[in-house]
Amino acid sequence: MGSLLRSEEMAYVRLYFDQVAAHDTLAELARSEIIQLEDLNQEVSSFQKEAAGEIRRCEEMLRRIRYLDEQAKSYKEDEHYRYSTELEDRRIMSPKKLEDLDEFLCTMEHSVKQITTHEESIEGSYEELNEMRLVLEACEDVLRDTNRGERGFVTSLVKQMGALTPAAANAFRELSEQSRTYSGKGLVNFIAGMIDTERRAAFERTTFRVTKGNCFVKSEDVSGGRTLFIVFLTGSKVRSKVERTCTAFQAARYPIPEDSEEREKSHGACIERLRELELVITATKASRAEIIRNYRDYLDIWRDFVEDEKTILQASNKLNYDTSRSLFIAEGWVASTDMEEFTACIKRGQLSSNAQAPSLVEVRGVGKSQGEPPTYFRINKFTSVFQAIIESYGIAQYEEMNPAPFAVITFPFLFAVMFGDVGHGVIMACFALILIIFERAFQNGPKRSEFFAYCFNGRYIIFLMGLFSIFTGFIYNEVFAVPMNIFVSRYDAVRE
Image (tube, rainbow, N blue to C red):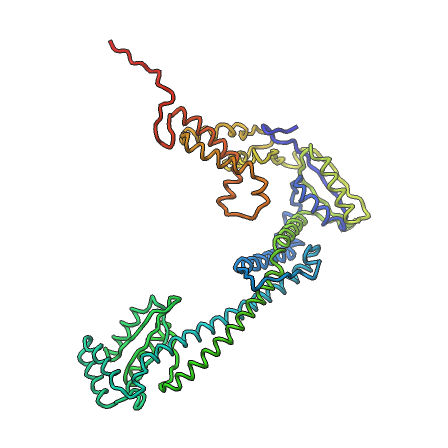
């Protein structure tokens, strides 16, 4: 008879069951967690075992479930997209076969990927059109006066460039004498587009250097970390250099008509196209929302089902199959006190599978031929954290003394020796006490962060550490690191 001080007495068992009952029997044993199966196929590599292909399929299904879960988490529910949808196929809501769920997950992943790619493509086109609209509006503001035949545009450029280089100013003065308007002769042209704001300064410096000052860059920051720019220049060679610079800096260039009427037409067409894309984006988001809402409530069910099936398949790889009698043979270790429950699990597996051949259990006891029995300590929600601390240093051998019961007192006390403070101890104890009182609500509630999970799993040890910290805090006479004089010192110095 085992206890917390010593490990449970183990028995080596051999199990015979029909091929029909294999799945249900292994499922019952996996749920009960009362047997440690021995691998009877150690000489066979993991890739050559019978269920290797099905295990890979389970891993691929889990990958699909993770992908669908990520898409569901990225989806923000909107009142406009709320649907009362429900899966029509009941086999998918509560799956019984891997094949049905695998086919559905494959179809669902393809649908989500397709509609997500389509949505990203449309949003990319929308962003490009919106940038083109901003560029058209900026160019219209800058070039409005020049299209009326006024000479102030080139003159203003000369004034702004005069402080840069005399050669650049002279070049533009010559152009101002040759041309009265921008659009008439086309001697002064421009390149307009968008660039990332972080590359703006480097782009302006590089453009100035490659053109040797024969250009003028006007830029303005817009939303989304982008900057609108217009480069005014002369000559085809200078234009070619600026275009290559734009390509090097991954700047988006947009074709802007020189004529004001053409720019107005382009702007109107751009606005109309943006409205159409907005409708398409809205419809696409609605379709994606409907698909996500159609499956997201069942992800946990599917994940648990696939993980259970994977565990069963991994266990089946440890079995030996007797081809002459069409029986599976399993061997493993069971606690002697769990033999009755173990036999009941075998019986339930046989009945649920409707197997004709009965399942047999052969108890072999403990012997040298079976090897060293495993160490098994019965733990509960209070002792589990202390047992985990001990096993992080090492696991006791079979029927060896277990130091975990002693750690229930020594570990919190040694912590309190270093952390002795009444105030801090009260905070720790109260925090852990809240977790203990409402532990059922936290267990059944939504999943929380990993840090909270650590605190919740160690709620009892945190509570004890808080109590011992209060105890040592009174000894140290400290509250929040402030000395107190609750217990007056009994030391009396006697002087002669």
